[in-house]
Image (cartoon, rainbow, N blue to C red):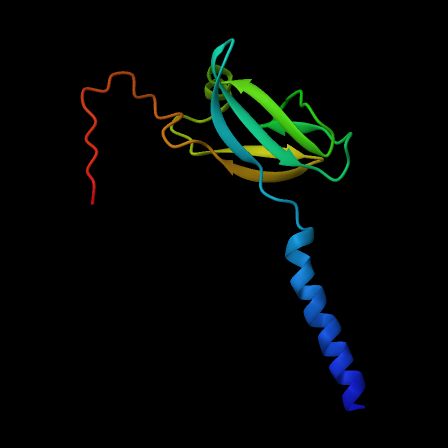
Length: 120
């Protein structure tokens, strides 16, 4: 009886440790230079290679199958997002996830008089 309980407990612990590895990672974003000036690259993973991907409710064309990549001009991201947004909603196969934007991307700082950086 004790041996069966120990085996059951070990199986449950092993399943619990494996569960985070099976979860899909959160999509990531980064800013790159492209033909349109500056573009936001959004990357992620999906279980079904044919699953549609959208950003803030707008379907986007992606490269790749299970590991995908979408490139969207920053101006388009501004049009699709709320002012001063810090995240975009990435939908893969009708499952929504928030992806953090690069800091200050939609801050609309047009004129920066001075930037002070201090070393601690």
